[in-house]
Length: 265
Image (cartoon, rainbow, N blue to C red; front, side):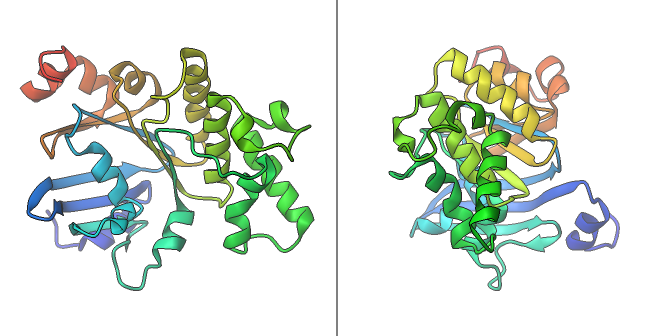
């Protein structure tokens, strides 16, 4: 280690989007995440894999302070976004979540029109000055989510009337509408059929041109298909993190190998 502070190192390595150091998460007295150190790169898909209950979703939710909503949850350590501590008292979690968007396991469109689902974030954050600008944001977000051509003639229809795969792409459009820098996805395909899953995976590959994408997945095949870097969590520990190909073909830790070959899971 050299004498630079974590902030200076994170700023120097401009391609690092998130730098996490010695992160601990407690639910009451239960120690859910232990000593996680990880650098998440910009314009890269990073996959978090591991058995159920290993801490991957808990750590994902640390990255946009979703754990703040759980009374008994306590997060310790440093998590820097572009060199700034996201847990600093000056940071407004609502503004942070505009920068670090989230897509959940089950598609959860608002009970509003397709248009209003996408327009919601830009409206509450005051990102547009007039209807024309808002129209533009809605269209470009739906295009980024590969949904525009399917819904452009029914923007006033309820978002809840779309198919499951379309609803999930609508939620992705809603997340990108606030011009985030990072997209967090918590098992975004687990409720989808194979065709919708393939569409979302293709979309994730396109989104990384503009965003840092972090995806939690139970599917090792999905992690291998969509990500460039993979982190393996087990029992609250980050066991191994590296290039996806290396993790899947030449893991350094025997626990990673046991998980990938199906001996633990």
